[in-house]
Image (tube, one colour):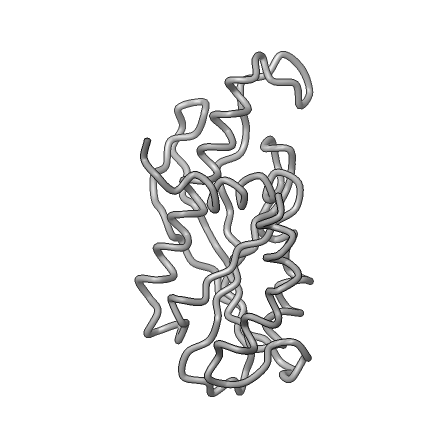
Length: 178
């Protein structure tokens, strides 16, 4: 738990001390561009259907820094709903500070016995794990395009709310295949 508290408290300080273009605390840019992309095709949902996974990239217009930090935002929705569209306001705020921000979607849903009630806890664990896999895929997609996106692959941050926060904890702590 302390690891995440420190992460959120030290995020602006760490990014400021490591970036080639100075601090990333104040909003320095006025205009933001947005681009939607598919980062994974034909992913199997919990119902067995296929779904493409999308993300939206936010970048500041006029940010000429050679390499910028990447912030990955993960939406909430109790693993049953939500969309990467929900992260637009906060994504714009961080893009104005000089971050490249991606808001990525992940496979939502699980077998349930009622509204937002899983049939058993294993269903929630599966939904959480699918989310971790999908967001890791979005990060790999971004890192593969680091030259085009002009991101520093050593400065990648992830943040989310609700189910997205659980997915971010999985990104941090479930790093070994075992």
